[in-house]
Length: 180
Image 1 (spheres, rainbow, N blue to C red):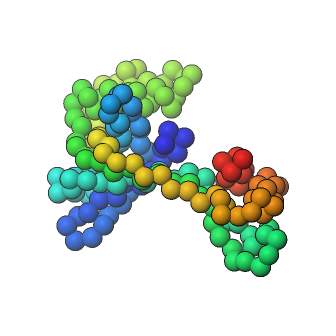
Image 2: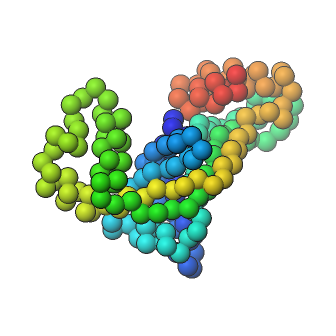
Image 3: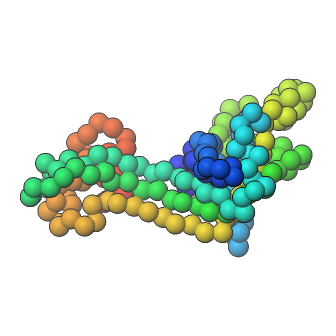
């Protein structure tokens, strides 16, 4: 989850499912797993929280095309992937709690730079925070899914890993690593 924190948040607006792609922060508090995030106040998704006892967050892992030419028999193309579905109850986060959440997020992503919320003009920070909505999801259920050619015989399986490693893209290499 932490390696793929740009996730898809799915809710229901009373008529249809609705989704947004958002940066998420996974926080492990021992007995409790939380997912923190924020979005533009202009995004109507946050307004659906009060009508949803449960929301879905989809974390996508590496994924890539698998050619049928890599098998030792006739077959069809497919896709290998990893994904995690996280379900939980959402709530809006405000005030000092929201400030601390954003500050921690910036510090983690800025790493060795000196860019910090605390060093910015506070009127600027307040303006930016007022244009966004913070939220936290208390995780109640996790479902991990993957398809990594686990249904193939050893010859095909190892050939797929080899062919993925010949490609130049990171996703193919990540899938090969997961298969290994």
